[in-house]
Image 1: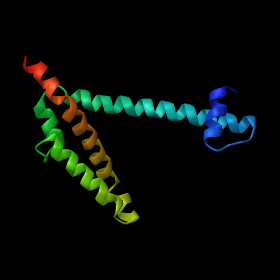
Image 2 (image 1 turned 60 degrees about the horizontal axis):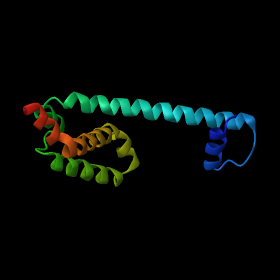
Image 3 (image 1 turned 90 degrees about the vertical axis):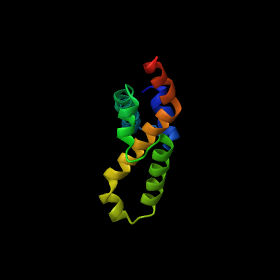
Image 4 (image 1 turned 45 degrees about the horizontal axis):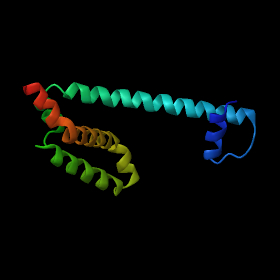
Length: 122
């Protein structure tokens, strides 16, 4: 068992020395890292698909007319989603995922969009 697994287990609150549990914590750690990498690749693919033109970005954030407006809309939806009953949250989970995706895309292009599209125009 390597030191990373033991450190991860301790950071999770496990103080024992059972090899089976340490192996389980190591599997959880590895799976978490793989899942995080997979999510990063998925988010990067969405951003890369929208980079070629501003029109693609505006279509993705519609009906908002700018990145600022899209961020405000997403933040407002996420805040409202947190205040609705659990049964309604479960029914509207795809809307929450879309709002988080829209917020991520809008933040990226708010920061880097003008540079990307200025290079494309030149």
